[in-house]
Image 1 (cartoon, rainbow, N blue to C red):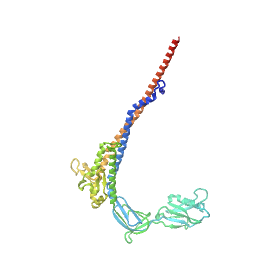
Image 2: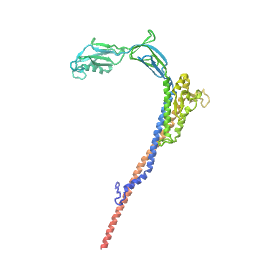
Image 3: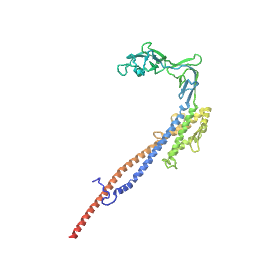
Image 4: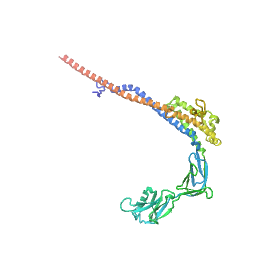
Length: 463
């Protein structure tokens, strides 16, 4: 039988162990392939990590090479009653005003009072009507109070029925105004004059808070009035949002360039560059037993290009140290924020040029006036780093992208070869098992024949 295995029944040899030992030798090529596959997969992971660091550097560099980082502004308010925020690109300027009043939500309370005894709650008290009318925006809505359909309308159900009409923008609750009395209060979920509404028949509800728009008076004296249905004002200063919390006089909001925010962008660039350099160093360290990318020339070249950005002067404006950037002895970026801010305050145009400058070179025809074939050469710090990062991590032909793809293909090939060896080894084990089984069977046959022959010779001797 094909699946039958006789392990040493006749020969007294442990043929199962012998087969396992032979198979261990046969599997050596697969073991070596599996080790290569594991290392290749580690290389894929390492390349991907480095590529992600390159992409982070590209993001930080492109931000400084563009306009938005240099248009960072900050809005400040002279009053705690007003908060101000500015979006990137908001125009510097100032605005003086007073807050006449803040926006309020309309709120009413019933003139009817429901008497509660003992431990009664709003859910125990009869509302007294099956429906209630609510007028919002000039339209009257009739709301059914009996929500559970038991034929009884309670005060709690009336409040829940009004609140459930989310399209009306109202919130109702039964408030306990004394130990033995409840009243129904209804409040708009929005603020402003448009939040006003009416509930029930005339004189059945009184106003608690009149819905009102927030109002500012801009300028001195009478100035001019500005209103908002909410406590937020936009458009008074381009790109600036004001939020008021209480009336206030003599408020001044100023919008100015935010140099600290610009410095934060530079620090982000430095952090990204160092993270990339650390990632490459860790994975290419010749003295480390865990570095899987030792001797990778592409990564060594990438490191050199990133370091060279600060190693050489930046055009006619001087070295990178002028804007607070230098290299440490161990080849890492360092940033002096104070030096940067001082230079930014003294000469912002030069600082921007040192980070953003791109030089246009004449094309093959040598004529700079012909723009169709002109070439752009990044010379600013951020512009250079952005170009380096794009070259390395471009999704189509980036050097790191191609390394990741080629290493992934090599890993896939190794994985297929390891799987092919599984089938080969399985067939080899089957062959060895059959051979040893055949040997045991042959030995058994020979032993039986020897016993028969011995018995025949014994018979002849007796005769």
